[in-house]
Amino acid sequence: MNSLNCNGLILDLTTPVVMGILNLTGDSFYDGGKHAGIVAGLHHVEKMVGEGAALIDMGAVSTRPGAAEIAGEDEMITLLSFLDAAKKSFPGCIFSVDTFRAGVARAAVEHGAGMINDIYGGRFGTGMFETVGELGVPYVLMHMKGTPANMQNDPHYNDVVAEVAYFFEQQLIRCRNHGIRNVILDPGFGFGKTVAHNFELLSRLSSFKSCGQPILTGLSRKSMISKVLETGPADALNGTTVLNTIALLNGAVILRVHDVKEAVEAIRLVGFCGNESNGLSYTGSPKFT
Image (cartoon, rainbow, N blue to C red):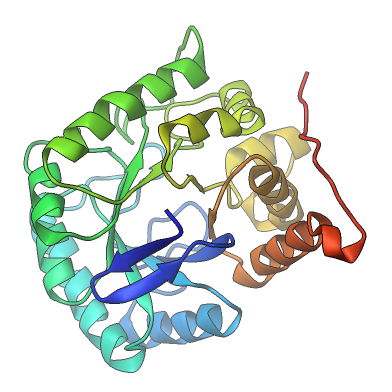
């Protein structure tokens, strides 16, 4: 799957790409409130596109651990008002919408969104798979144990990679049964996982290639970095770049990030390293103990 039709705009996945994060809520774990509002949001989109983002993922509901729930009507109003302005200002940009509500997903695509990013992976209520199948846009299928309110309450797995892979396999069957042709897999780093679970998923990320779908990773400034380095999200850029590099070496083709420039540079350098015409070649994979 080297390209995706995103509501009329084509996303080329011949080489890995960057998905820039746009939080329209004031309750994000890292940059909440900085880009809320149409003017601030458009400025940030301009910056990310200028730095090389292939698509922008916008969300109006915080999914950090313990986040307060936002009513669907409020989510809809925030997303659609911004999406209308963004499509007018950046008609050639692909906008993904981060939502778990089928009604919001339908309205967003009708207003020009080209992809749906669902943190619940189709588990929230009913209608998401049916809706995305009818709309014909690519769908990001993410794994999460529990909900944002309780996902970090002592999550347990016998084998986190095997259980996430099984979830993907079962949900992919449902996606196909509802006519969803293009699915992107996101293991859900930080969503119902301990630090150990997260690094196990990262080190064995290539296992998910057997599902036959593109892999997206969302590692940007997350606590799996902060807890190891004993820092905070504001000081986790270097750690993010390191983990993005490992993800690329293990098969990720979409990096979902706050910091576009650094992620684009990581992709360029990893690509250069693996290009035999440059006289360089690296075929190993990182190992964790």
